[in-house]
Length: 129
Image (cartoon, rainbow, N blue to C red; front, side, top):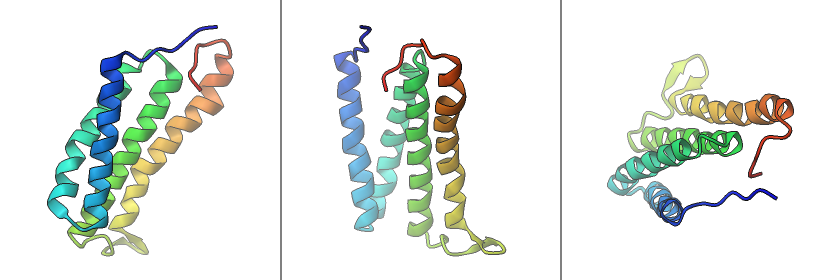
């Protein structure tokens, strides 16, 4: 049975990523704008690094890209609320908050690609899921 082993330095980075992500969302929840906005950068940068480091395994890459898109959407949404433009209209009934759906859907598409297209075509490929 094949094993997927995460090097310790990568695992430490992933754990630190969770701390940054929580601090970002705490800043959002408590409307501590400086904390929320500052924590976007380490949270997003580490998620990109994790996706890059796992690019050899399609299952990991697609899930980590979905996380990166999620953090992007979440961060944009937070900023739109902090700067009070979330409820302003872009076009018709679409508000600026709705623009967060673009990266959210990109994450869904990354996972849909993996499960609906890549995985069925590569049933013997190593995966972590």
